[in-house]
Amino acid sequence: MAKDKTENASQRFMRAMGRIRMILGPANRTALGHEMTEQNRQLLVQREAETQQWETLRRPDGSTYVVPRNPEDKSLR
Image (cartoon, rainbow, N blue to C red; front, top):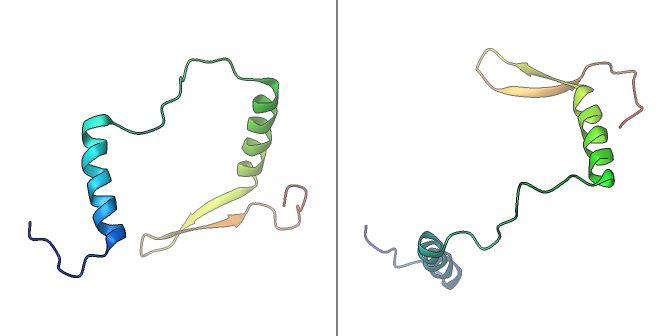
């Protein structure tokens, strides 16, 4: 792969960091086995309720878009 002569400093930095991440792995790792707090549980319920008010429709060309299931319901918007 030939280097691009127009590559700026930020692009060189990102390429170098990508190589370092291949060796060291991602910078942030969190445990997945922790207990969910009450605040997080309430937030999850709220987010799930928000997603239930939308419906994904598919156009004939394969693209998708999101519309409200019930346009008159403004409770969560």
